Each structure stands twice: as structure tokens, then as C-alpha cells.
Amino acid sequence: MDRRRNRRVAAFLTVRIWGVDAKSQPFTQHAQVRNISDRGAVLQGMIRPVKAGAILHVQHDKDHAQVQVVWVGKQGTRKQGQIGIESLSSESFIWDVNLLHCAQIVGKG
Image 1 (cartoon, rainbow, N blue to C red):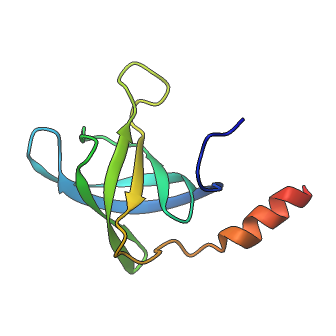
Image 2 (image 1 turned 60 degrees about the vertical axis):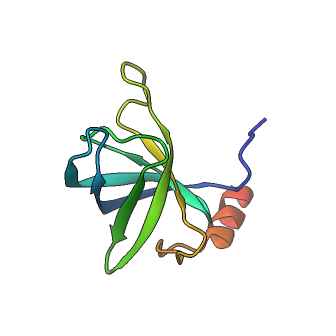
Image 3 (image 1 turned 135 degrees about the horizontal axis):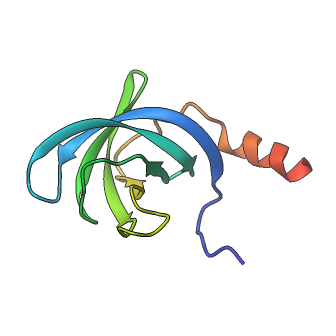
């Protein structure tokens, strides 16, 4: 059984990320969105290590938002290079995806 609080849908979007890495060094890079929910997303392709709790900026097309890293994939596992992010409560939804519509389509699959 899925323990997630929010429904997620697969997504394949490229985003630009910037912030401060685990060594307190500023960085910017591109990553891919693996899946999204109404509050967050899973990103893959992280080159720079970041810490859980870090605040990052994510840009998709012309929209951007601040997010908090909620988990980081452990090195040496299949989740290496992935992070889970959650939108800060004051930030708007930046993904150009209708989650309810996507979930309904998948449910009819």
C-alpha cells in the first residue's frame, strides 16, 4: 500500500535548480522531474549533493518557486542522484500539469 499523502503522476520535465550544496557552495544545474504531486516532486540527475532541509530554487519554463528538500537518495543505491522536494506553503504551483485530470486518465487505464 502506498503511504504517500498526495497522489503523484509521472512527469518528464527538465528544470533548472540553484541554491547552496551540502558543502555550502552555491550551484546551479539542470535536473529532470520524475514525478509530481500537488505539493512536491521527485527530481533525478542531481550532480551536486544537497542536504535534507535545504531551500532551493526550481525553475520550469518561466515559472519558479522555492522548495525544501525533504529527502536525498543515498549514495550507492538506485535513488542516488534523486531528491524529494516540497513547495513552501507560500509558493505557487509551477508545474503546467492538471494532476486531477492525469489521475483520472490513469485510473481508467
